[in-house]
Length: 454
Image (cartoon, rainbow, N blue to C red; front, side, top):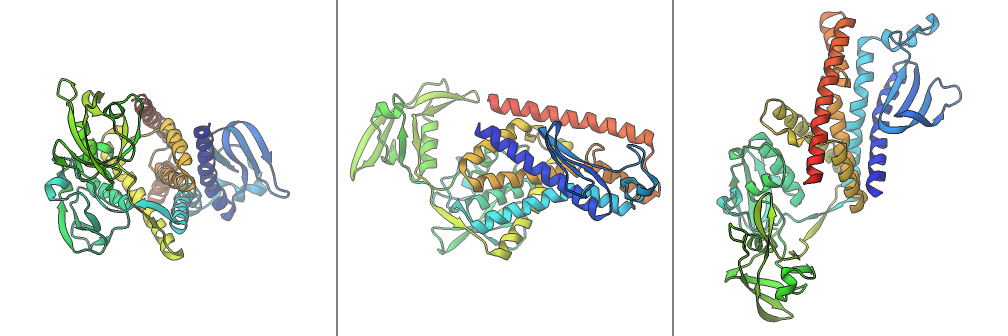
C-alpha cells in the first residue's frame, strides 16, 4: 500500500508542476486556458474560480496531464478572442509556453535538492572499505580505512570530498565521461594524504550498476567486521556465531573490515558449489574464540557463492551534510544540472550503442523505488522526487514530435525558415514519434519486469 500511495503522490506532484509551468507562462503570455487537468479519464474533482476561464480537473488515471488552450486548430474561435488563441501568439511566446513544463520540473528538482541540503542528510563518511580483489582501486594501492579527503577529474582542480555518497556520484560522472580520477587519501580526517590515480578511462561503461562499482573496487564505506543478526538454522547459527562477535581473522588472514569479511565468506565455495570449511578467530566479550564455519552455497547469477545466514559488518560511521541558505540553493542547481547532463549523456550513449538499453526504467521500477524511498523517510523520498523530476524534464525536452521537445523542434524550423511545418509532415512526424515513444516504453517495461523477476 505504501508503494502505491508513494507512487501516486509522486506522479501527481510531478505532473501538476509540469502542467502548471505550461499554464503559468500561457497566462503570462495572454493565452486563454480552457482546462488544466492532472490525470486522464473520468474527472474525480473539478472546480473553477469566479471570473476565471480555466476549469481545473483531477482525473482518475494519474499517468499524465494536459493544459487545453484556446486554439484555432482545435475548433472555431470567436473573432473577438482570436488574440487570446495559442496559435496566434508570436513564436517566442509559443516556444516559452511549451518549454515551461520541462523547465518547471527542473526548477522543482533544484528546489527539492536545496531543501535536502538545508535540512541536512546523514551520509557515511568517505572512509573506504577493502577494495575488490583485482579492481582498479586495489591496483592503485587503496587499502581498508583510507579516508578520501579530496578528488579531481582529469586536470581539474581538486574538490573537497563531502561524504561517501558524494564520492560515488563523482566516480559515476567520471566513469561515464571516460575520465581518470585522482584521489587524495589518508588515514583519518586531517591526516597527511597520498595521491592515488584511478584509471577509470579503462572501463567500458555500458550500465551504471553494482558491477560497475565492483570493477572500480569501491563498493561500500568502511565498517567494522562485526557479526550482526544471525538467522536461525543458518550456517552462522550452526557454527555458534553470535550477534556482536568481532571477527579478527579467517583461516589466519587478518580481517580489516566488513567488506573483506563478506568477500571471504562469498569465496568459501568450490567451483562445483561445495562449501569450504573456514576457521574463524573472533573476539567475544573480551575473549578470543575460535570457531569452525562452513558457509552454505547459493547460486548468484549462475555462480556459487558462500552465505552464512547473518548480517555482516557494523553500521558505517555517519556524518551530517548540511549547507547554508545560499550554498544549499547553489548546490541544488548544480546537482540538477549534473543529473540532467548525465541523463542526456546516457541517452546518447544508448542511441549509438555504447550503453545498454537495460539502463531504461519504467513505471514498475519507479513505483518500487517510490515505496522504498518513502519507507526510508522524508529526505529519501524528496531525493527520489528530485531525481524523477529531472528525468521527466529532460525526457520532455527530447526532440520527439509527441513531446514538448518535438514542438520546440517545429518552432526552431519555423524560426529558421520563416514558415511552419506543414500539416502533412506534422502528421507523419507525430506518428513516427508515437512509434519511437511506444518502443522506448516497451523496452523500459521489459526491463522493469526483468529486474523485479530477478
